[in-house]
Figure 1 (cartoon, rainbow, N blue to C red):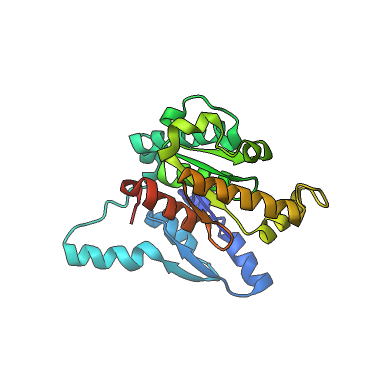
Figure 2 (cartoon, helix red, strand yellow):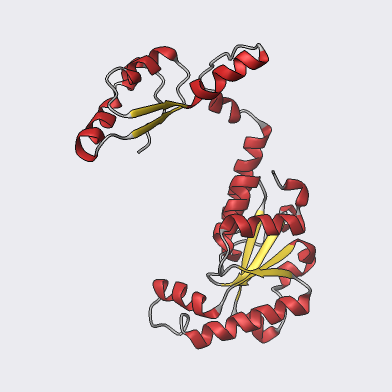
Length: 237
């Protein structure tokens, strides 16, 4: 359970939820990052959980060691919305939404990465993760049967080959995912998934596109691999 934005003594009385949990489920463990001492005092009084003050545990020893007092200022998140990095991230999210699933060919020159792969191979969540976590303008395009018949990438992507990264997936897993969306359809059949994955991987090899299988990888792993290959300077360690 999360109790966000507890920044006044009145709001601190939400600790009733903590005590209710103690009555119903047993003594809870409560982690707090409150910086206002008045608010923290209200939480402490009558709290029937095990209270762990994260700032008190770590900030006070640092104050002692460094000889510097924390200003205990509330509302640092509001500063973020004023930064260039924040606005760049919002712009990247909007770009990725507009260029999701091949919806738009406009302004692909601004794209920092273009993901390609068969439908349901993980392109959309990866694009949004790259935008939200790394501020990367990511477009994504599905490879469809018409592309396989032509045996080449969509024409709109050809000028941007260096930005392209491919995603693939095991046919068995792809069939499972598609069956959740369109059960018992040709789109979700294992034979069709095998054909699409095989054709998609062959196209990426012919085009010299870097690619990976998303079958057993988390979004974080996929995004990190893409950044290492295409925009290593955007990696944050």
